[in-house]
Every structure is written in C-alpha cells, then in structure tokens.
Length: 172
Image 1: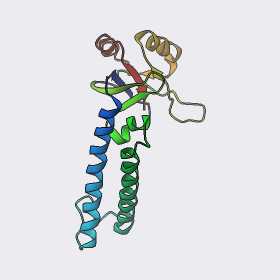
Image 2: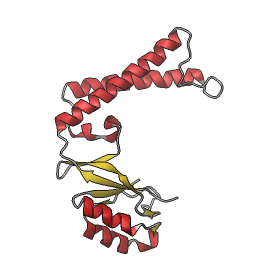
Image 3: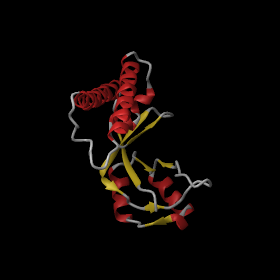
Image 4: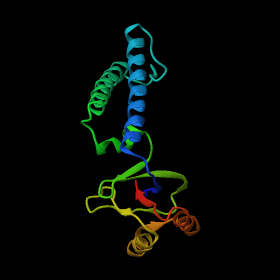
C-alpha cells in the first residue's frame, strides 16, 4: 500500500486565526461529547453509538476521556500555554502542515491529491516524513526515489506547481 501525496498551498494564516479556529472546533467537540454523556446518564444511547456492534460501556469511557482531554487542551490554549502546536491539524480539523522553521502554515489544496503515489518507507517500515517545497526539489525527489513512485500524474503535478509555486508536498 502506498502513501498519499498531499499537495498543500502556502497560507498567511496567523497564530490568532489558528487559535480562534482551534477553540471553535474544540468547543464544538466538547459540546458533542457532553451531549453523548448526558444522554447516556439519562438512559438514551446517542446516534454515534451502535448498540448492536459497540461495547457501550467502553465507548462511554472513551468519550469521557476525550471530554476531559479536550477540556484540558482548551484550557491550555486559552491560557496561552499552547503556541505553535495550535497549528496541529487535529485542532484545526484540516489537512495541513506547519513549517516551524519558516513559521508558515500550508493547507491542503483539495484540488490536487495523489499526483503520484509512493511506497517508500523508512528503514523501520514507518511512513516517511519527506517534505517537498519546490518543483525543482520535487523532480529531484522523484528521480532519487523512482523505484518507489507509481501512479504518476505529471500533468496534475505540473499544474499544482504552476498554480502554487510556493506550495509543498507531504506524504501520509
């Protein structure tokens, strides 16, 4: 099974914008988890739990842990204890990458996906963490890893780099 290629565009998203989005998303998650637990305490099984296939007790415990975790994370964000990690895609609920070195956030383009695939792995079998920041670096990476590349859509790849010359590609 190969890795997806995520084609990301550079954004000008500020820390404050990311923080606001993360708070909104986490508050929505807390609201949902609270609703699920409230329903359970009142004898109702929420739609997100399938009583025929789910271990209800385990799911409720998981929801309780998730609620406590999200409440702690929200508190830390509001207190300013979480800085660059605010750009974590789990908080923003989107596919993106924060380049800590250049302080730039890249966001999935959605219009370009899997312009090629790769089955390259690290020596221990885990996914590679390669990041590609330019057309030139991309073609060098493709040449250096030609034995691991398949499903190449060169037209789409060129279109991505033409439209987003300051974009990036990551794998996952």
